[in-house]
Image 1 (cartoon, rainbow, N blue to C red):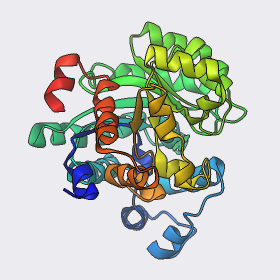
Image 2: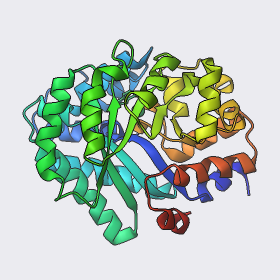
Image 3: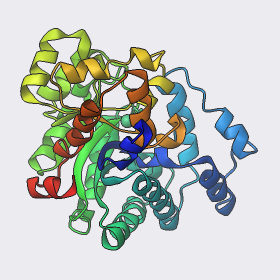
Image 4: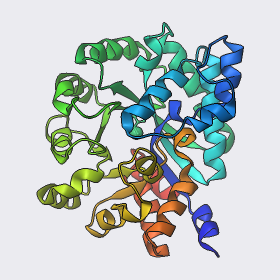
Length: 330
Ligand code: ES4
Ligand code: ZN
């Protein structure tokens, strides 16, 4: 088989995906019209043309503006259903999905609306197609720890209702200047509550943020983590502990974390023995879903089929699925 078919045929698990980052311009415009939300762009093409980012913050500005079109349970449902359709087409069998309630509660949307719409699509996909998933509620790190605590308090009454899906807590948004330590207390509480823990670290921020995500927040996976390579002791530790890194190649290229895909360190991280996975991050903004991310690194880094299989298998191994489920799905 050719490379593209080989990638398409591999069963995949996705572990780093922001559901608000799956809102394609077409759906974004349709929801804006339905909800009477004014947009700064007057066409789908004009919006797509604005997806030309210089760094993480330049992306986040557009991402939060775009999320303002999400108002009703049905809106969250349709966005999530569209993501699942794209993922199933890419032979993704399992996805652990980040969502940012603060982006919506700040605008007066109920946190119950956010949970309900996403969960309805995920349960429907599970019951209809056997598509497996989990939800990871993520705190926005540019906001205060008190705000994160308030979000946790607002969400906890929903825990039983969503016990089949809500598996973890994450940390995202602007990394520089918002170190893991800022969220030490709220992560300690989430740990006591028995949630799986992850955090974005070492995307734009220094390797010390990866160390602190591990030592202060006690996360089980690092989202991105590509800058870990700058700290040899950290690299040793990540390899030794097999701490997964959820790497997002097209995201790194679009946000100028790397200036050329041929310079991406994914293959070096893999060869150093780290549990590297491939993920799409915000696929509507970064130019592709899972297969596009695999194909981009396969071509640019001339990955072998053995390496591609390792990356895909790592996705299942690094997931929060029970061991028997990991085996069954891959
Ligand atoms: C994000 Cl690429 C990335 N990094 C940090 N926070 C985010 N939220 C959505 N995408
Ligand atoms: Zn991300």
